[in-house]
Image 1 (cartoon, rainbow, N blue to C red):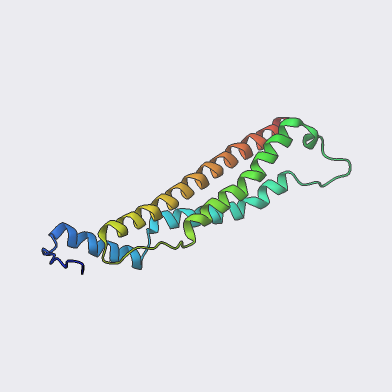
Image 2: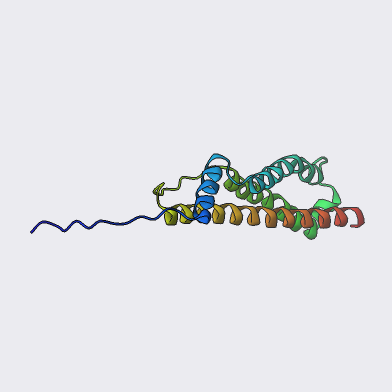
Length: 149
């Protein structure tokens, strides 16, 4: 028995649906700039401040400077050094493009794809900000321990 073919009526899109469609088209052309700009700023700060931490922890003399033998300096140095690549990688997650599949005509799929994109970028930026803040606090404490140690 052949399948039954049913006619489907389609209504004209509402102004809100049209606005949402135009907004998606704009987002496809130009992804969320603020998140990416924030991630780029973190990448540049991480790259620039890497040398400051390594300069503080530099092995200049033999034997080691006294402050490098202190446990707080070593722990804070390790935290500061390890937080850098975490912040850098998380910020790169925000900046690098991702592949999302959806039917262009499906508003539901487009919205789901956009939400997945935003979720990935927001989580990446939050992780990058947390790691950068952790690094900043660890470096400030490290600097204070070295100065007053």
